[in-house]
Length: 238
View 1 (cartoon, rainbow, N blue to C red):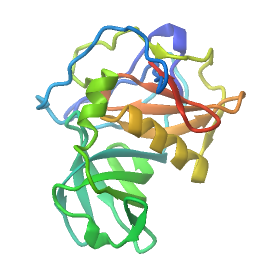
View 2 (cartoon, rainbow, N blue to C red; view 1 turned 90 degrees about the vertical axis):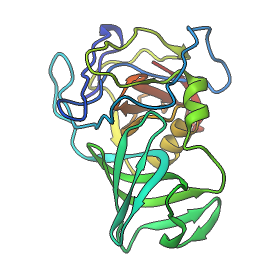
View 3 (cartoon, one colour; view 1 turned 30 degrees about the vertical axis):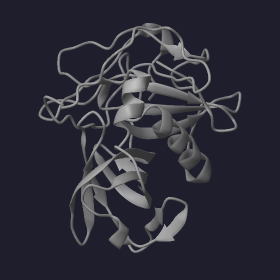
């Protein structure tokens, strides 16, 4: 279910063919290495979608898991809304009576979700669809564009391989090791990852043996794994 760190293998996809690459990733809120500065295009050439995929080298297909993404609301309806991430990924959100809403740190209603609003959506991710458990409307923001540029996030482009590079502290972990988690811990890890490395969709959170977390990132060419501390601070990404 997880890509091996040293293999540099990925699985990539596009809107009409396969899915965004699954490879290695991680970030450093405090210490960012001097990997090449990368500029994020202001307009994506396509709108990639992410689908559960079999990791390179085998392993089980990833099913729907706790995840989330950040972006700008495009359309709204009585049952949900759509938004675009900082790299142009189109995400569909399904709302339910149990979905909770916040505007900043305060409780809100679904009426707070309007076109043009910057949102962080948490819930169950299946491809590029999120069944929302929580929607946080951010009073001010650009949907993560500035943070994505600062982190060097590379938008998905079909046929372009992911670079073998890393930023910050990357643990030595092995594919298949760790436990997929949900609930409060997963939400905190996703919030941390999306704050520093937005632009993709986080489709699962894995707790490692040392108590840290790996947040899996899809629908971008890089990064694919974001590592978060026990205290929910981004350590590194690759």
